[in-house]
Amino acid sequence: MTAVAEAREAGPVSAPSRYQYLTDTDRGTPAGELLRRYWQPIALASDLPQDAAPLPIRIMNQDLVLFRDDLGRVGALDRKCAHRCADLVLGRIEDGGIRCPYHGWLFDTRGAVLDQPAEASATSKSRVKARSYPVHEAAGAFWVYLGPGEPPLFPNYPALQGGQEYRYTCRWMGDCNWLQASEGNIDPVHTSYLHQIELYDDAMKARWGVFSNTARPQISVAETRFGVRLFTTRALPEEHVSLRVTNFVMPNACAVGGFEGDLGPGGATMLWDVPIDNEHHWRWEFIFHRSGKLDKEALDRQYRSEKTAGDRMIRRRDDNYGQDRASMKRGAFLGLGPCFSIHDVVITQSQGQIHDQNDEHLVSSDIAIVRARRMLDEAIQQVAAGGEPRGLVRSDEDNDFSDLVVITGTLSPGVTKEAFVQQCAEDPSLFALDPSASDAAE
Image (cartoon, rainbow, N blue to C red):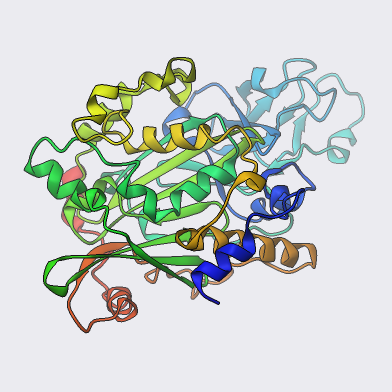
């Protein structure tokens, strides 16, 4: 099926939309059960140092408390105490766990009751257990598994490997549904429009020049074991072709080129759009380069200038997000400054808190959106039938993601995009960490 035919088949569709159920991630819903099969980032590691207060976490309409006990161990429990449903965020960190302030019940990181100071029965503790969830720390964040049974292995994606010397980790609050934000990440065409900025100097032109090329891109996709690979090609002089390879990573992540692009091959930005509830999400960013030479100070300055408390944008909808119409005449397409994250958050919020897909008209350039929706739909059916969805890792052998290629390059005449990507995937040095970056950090 051609890209045009596939897009036409998928939309517009009659109400209710066949994909509308993907926006609801409550427990027991099709999308909610799917997303709970994967590890999801929930908090910055820096927000939970030793002796920190417990953190309230809301994820997929579910309320948790994340805490570090007095021995340094981290746990995630249902926020309501298993006794009388008091708020454990108010709890005391002591004696190897978190103690409910209502009646003093003490829970460890796995939910076991260690102490019931007012209870006479010696066996009562063994009959009660708080609901707990596996927690994993990686890439400057805490991740949680909310699904049934044994959690999958934590995926060894290139952008999550190594210490923080190789990466910048942050998040943004988004006032819209997770799905439209996730789909924005795998829409290659918008980079030539939404992300055009004023290019003041040669350094900026080198970093962002590919985005300013508005020549009509050719987009094709290929299914992978972890999701969908996107090939975006744009014509260059002398019969050369610019190739940008990005990836949809099941079920709510992507791997693309971003701020690290000026450092050459060996970098990737991974984004996760994690539902808070059906009308809000966290946009997580893991910006990585194997060299350890990210200009994190510049990135931090730019991001902090756009943020307020709670990792929200300073820009507000009621004043049109501070859009600078004058800058639009000087080369900026959107007029919201140089921060790509701001562009993405604003534009997906502009679709409404829950985007009504019945109003859209998909075209050939939306082929990646169509394929990702179908993949999510197929995965939901697999879960409902008792199977495992695409991308879960159950063995060390399958936990090698050197094939998760993210690269922007130039194809010479006669070289296919598939051959180019295969060569990158077989290059062991592509994402190999430069040990000197780790040495410098010490």
